[in-house]
Image (cartoon, rainbow, N blue to C red):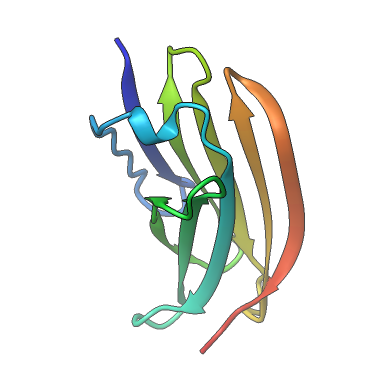
Length: 128
């Protein structure tokens, strides 16, 4: 079945959350995604909100805006995109907030038909 997948998982420290939605796959076929990630303190003490913004560099359209909540020292992952088609594009990113809550490490990958086209790794400052 051809479908657009959105998948988010919180590590076992929180209850696992998964979501799969059927969405128009058209914008994802041959997309050239840009991945932006922000980490901010959450409303609840000791929590952090990881916000992603995935846009298509071909036209600037927003492809997805995943949002995850996590405690410090816990890894979260989001994966979104198309599978099962020619030029199927997926984007995945993983974020782990440091135990002190000041920074977060991240990595992301853009894949086409399961082959990595680009990957990033870095450290982010936690905002707010």
